[in-house]
Length: 283
Image 1 (cartoon, one colour):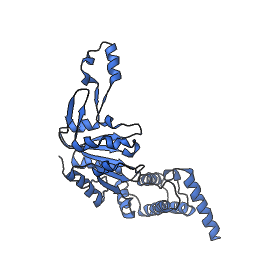
Image 2 (cartoon, one colour):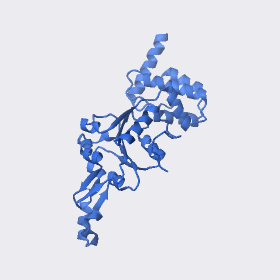
Image 3 (cartoon, helix red, strand yellow):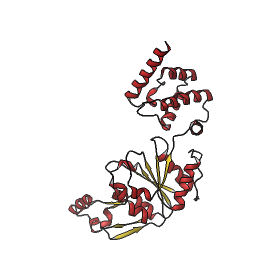
Image 4 (cartoon, helix red, strand yellow):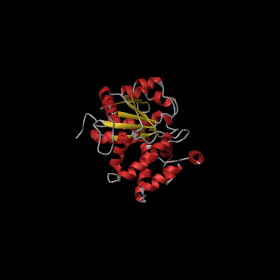
């Protein structure tokens, strides 16, 4: 059964503003551009929206080498040449060598779908502009077969970006935009409750205290993300770490099992220096 509005799911804690953004994109029939720090659940949002709306999810994960036309289709000329040399009868029909992309699959779907274009800022600067007409008009032309593919149903397109580069203004004008703010303590506690409903309050309090101290440390290069906090908490639970031990490590500046939260040597060195300075100051 399909739904027309997104109200969240039991696996994904969505703020009221985020739910409003999803429903605005549905109403306006425009792509939803989601930005935010890595690890704040941008990709998972598309998965949960598709589930909540009862729609099929088609995912297109962007790399630095990805070209816009690959989301529409690709013509496999190499395979056709090889088959022609082998005398394969398939070569008589060029359609046998047209590989449908994610957008083509969404356009021909008998039911409305959700399309995830994940990490669009990884591609070159022309990538978003090359999709302007297709996402706006919901159709494209296949030159090899001289056919025009039109969407039977307009899919909900969710586009994520880690804000690594600016997107073209013409592209931004066609999107509904939402920035996922990093969760505050109350929201993070709600997220933890979804994943670890039985976590003890004293352990969670000690872990969150240290986590937010790390994020607020001036000069830290890579702030730990929500997903990294969940990984760290899973380790603390699996090793049955005492909350007092978590607090003791917080006092030294370096968290226990730091590799779950700190991902480069510069940040570890910074925390070690700050800890040493704090000890000298106390003396």
